[in-house]
Image 1 (cartoon, protein in one colour):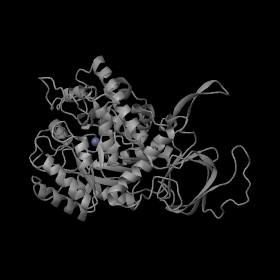
Image 2 (cartoon, helix red, strand yellow):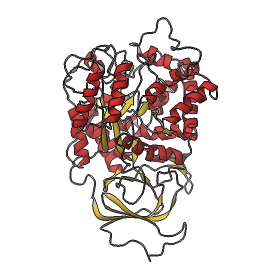
Image 3 (cartoon, protein in one colour):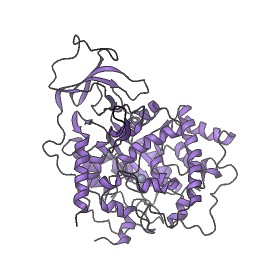
Length: 538
Ligand SMILES: [Zn+2]
């Protein structure tokens, strides 16, 4: 049994990095069993579907979409809405057909900030992967690889070979400064054999990582000289860098400085208000503030955006222009801080009972030594501050998008009452709340994520939109998600059935297709529910 302190170290709370690497006890996903996913097929035809292609183009249909093995072969419109489809000219020769009349087809979703769970949460990989796929998530970018680099790369390879039930995995490992006071959020190290103390060490880390075919790095707090060396070398060797710029770092290196030094994505928002300061250089910390007290850290974070330059001000526009000039990408993970503005909503979400493992539920509870469990004495005023914080943050993101900037969806689930898969869908709802049109939300959830993953490599994305030649990563939903994103939740959407005037549950993803393999989303959810039920047995 791990001590609470060991858990805290894994969750990134201890000042010093553990001297010895943590024992990795997280269960790998089991090999794919018979009946878990069908295909790929020589010729799969999805018939009569309405296509939402991920580019921002409006829906169209009915269409027949042909998939040969793991690639989209063709997309053809075969008629007009509400008119019977003439069989003439429809693609033929299917080895498997899906009648998707009245349904919607979208590219598979990309979660740009997706931790694979682990020891602190007590979540086996199978549980996390199935929750993602059940919600249409076919690609994830893992910032940190908290279960260790080798563990992460093994699951990436097994997913790529489809020997496990899992989304595509992109591995960004934690680049942690040696002996830094608060270097590692995830209590993790890159597994790099050597110290990480000088700019040259960080250049060596990049070379070592490129040889291991690692996709990129996650940074929390590095001294500026180390950060710029990492960013420079990563760019040269075509690896990405995602940064959660911790409060321990932002006074010396904020988000716009990181963007202009070659950062790939800013995670969450830390360092962004600091980039917008025009009447101070440091956040207004109260005298008794202590970064190790997470109620201070998150309570004061909720009072931070109002310290930045006002929306529409000269400074606000000037900084936004500089981000635009870099074609910079934000991964805001709006969902992960939702409990800060509405604790009860996050705590009592209707999916917890059936789908949240008891170990994960325990991890979420208020605790001074567990990361993201800062409800020691959360107040009405704390929630009000956070609501205001969100308004300013959302305004920045929406305006940035309107001016041509990229903002992609990511969830950071597994902390703060946020559940894998379910709370990725919540991220889509929050993008809509920020002012994104539902088609802009879908693009942020599909093409945007695909582009940001491909960007450091210099290659074009192979998924993220519905086009001939792209990988067959797709989502089929019976209800229209543009009308209501709630129909994507595994628990569906409660509405009144007009014929009987009684409440009915509709929606949930029907099929998630990855690499041409068709997964029954309801079956994935049933597997997860069974795991939870079993874990609750005495
Ligand atoms: Zn994270």
